Image (tube, rainbow, N blue to C red):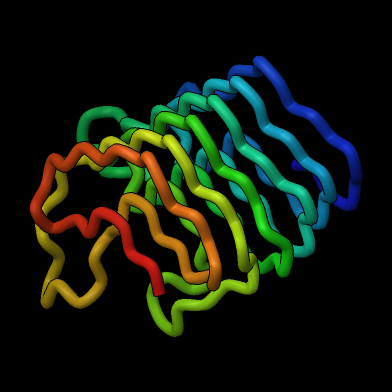
Length: 171
């Protein structure tokens, strides 16, 4: 965990769990100018999660492979930027195996909102895992979920393994 730091660069690192437990590859809170570059995150529940007042966050050229062991189900989120009022930049990443591939949304299940206005989500690839439709189908997983105003979402590619997925949701 990185908390309360500034000008942090995490580059060319590998993070993985040996068992299917609830781990985060990288978790940052209130860390300004955090760059996560060319890292590989494997077999965890949450790949990269950045929360609360994180000005200047960027995730670029990361490989987030969250496929779980047989019977382990899908991981929760690949790259998440939550509870921050500053724009972020999420570019050229490959995410697979998560219910939410890229998430800039403080509450994806209830009142969708984010103050990370003018964020950029470009040139990412999200491979959605195969899942069965849940009861009632009211809450559906999303490959790229952005709930901030004025964002740029361009050049992204999505691979579907289930018709239950929403590709890109902007609210």
